Amino acid sequence: MDDRKNNLTEEICNVANSYGMRFIGPNCLGVFNNWYNPEDENSAFNIAIWEILKKGNFSIASQSGTLSSHIWFDPSSVDLGLSKSLSVGNEANIDKVDEFQLAELKTNAKLAKLANKFGVQVILESLGGHINANDIIKHVKLYKKLSNNRPLFVSGPLPIDTATGHDHI
Image 1 (cartoon, helix red, strand yellow):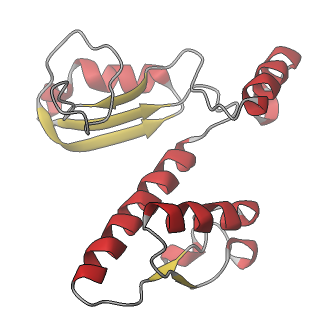
Image 2 (cartoon, rainbow, N blue to C red; image 1 turned 90 degrees about the horizontal axis):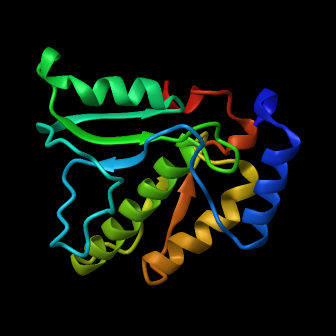
């Protein structure tokens, strides 16, 4: 929250945190999945959208609702098909990285289940640089829940001893 922090924002965050809630906003578009199918209960819920957009592989994550909305309005001018968009507002109690971490964790859990069907007993994964050191235990517990307790061995540098982006070099 850094410079965007104020008393009202802090109060809203405290109430949300006391109920275990996360929120996106203000002044942003939230989550958009161009592959959303209201008939499919497993597809991710969408914010309201009033146009049908060309589907594609281009996705965007932004704090700015303005940036996201401009890309939505005319991606065809640069021949882009839109896949997903995440606009988070002032990041008061959630940020872009939170959503990507959760998506990565869910994908890894699915892969662990699939690998186990083919006799793979060990999944190696690096958490280095991707999650806050204070969240490691929470993420490992969630992984175990999502993967039905499949083993996860964490390798690579931990966030506490990794410079920004260093694990991607």
